[in-house]
Image (cartoon, rainbow, N blue to C red; front, side, top):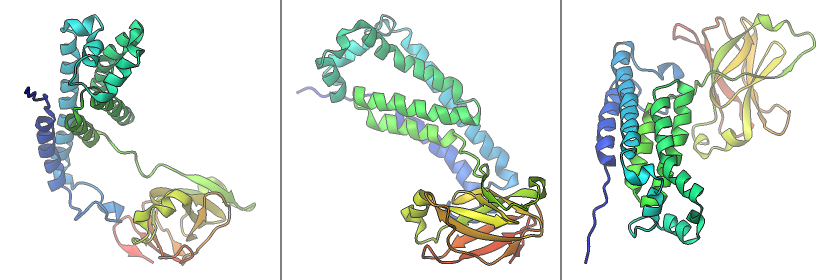
Length: 301
């Protein structure tokens, strides 16, 4: 009987990133990640530098790992002559999916064999470069990481290693800014010029017992109405166009209809730094509970 231990260093990398995430987590003043007051969704100023350094260190660590892995392959003869995939396909320790491809005769074409051999090297170099690039490129890098390690799972059955590396990459990318989207649904014929409107933050959410099912996120959109203008956003953090000092109401609509549903009490935004916070009732037709959180942190109804 022959026993073989597969090399799998995913736990070593994961251990380092657990330590980095511990630094960030301990500096976060939220009790959990589901708090609805987005003004609390940040790291306190005294600890921002330490947390930022931990994340940046993780990015450069991934850059170093993928660069070393890619360059190390160039010193292996089977990689440089483009036959490493053939060696994997004929290895009984390889993944069942990869051996199935080999038996199908797909690797009888030399160019496919060469492409499958060099593709991991190209992906690793792209990951190494883009993981320390801009936020958009880091999000693109995550897609490359999933493709690369998804292929590794099929090739060699190294599931834990691949999942660990995907998770490590996920920790160092930057999520999109939640306050970026404005969609103007309608304006009245006598509506003033858009220059009279300001974009304010709007934290509009379904009822806390309904939100986990994702119904509203999939089929409806919140709408903020002010001064004859209706702006549609997304559930959670977004932007809305309002007039300073004018009454504001919050409603909702289904994606495929123009009819506005539900209603809310009128509130007034007094400053462009204010944030509209609204929560829908339990039923779809329930009224919204709305408040304006001023820039200095106080609440106004």
